[in-house]
Image (cartoon, rainbow, N blue to C red; front, side):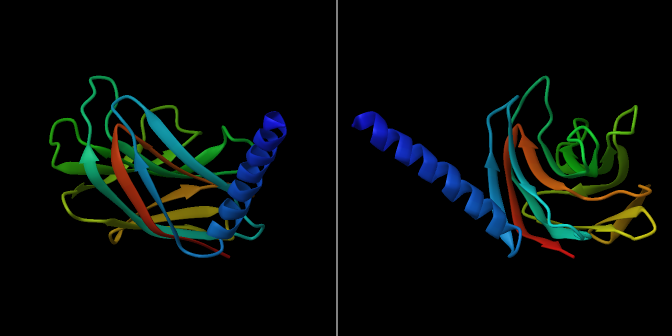
Length: 177
């Protein structure tokens, strides 16, 4: 009998988790991402067909020290394959820890992300907007700075919010057509 109740509880958790994830993409939501050094956490959800815009804010509350990993937050959009992605990456500058490097990241890049700005992070949420234009351009705006990635014939399928080696707060995340 105990196994039966355990099974019901597990099914409830799975179903409840799916409902929360699906509803979260309709209304603004937050993700508190708090991980120890050299670890990461991911929130991911499927996007509705026709999604063209993701907006929100990211705040670094507490960086953690690691020789291998920098405190990092990412907002990634992927297509048909999970290894086909692009988006925004924020990471603490190893040479100037009071600043966060703001970069565009893409699975098609063979090198490190393309830095578009460097921002003081202490007590400052960093606002972002990611737009997929019909012509196949992805525009990323971060605190009034922007970059562009070309993505011909791309369909957005999945949103991933990721952090590592720190406590980050993703707030007012909105997914819009």
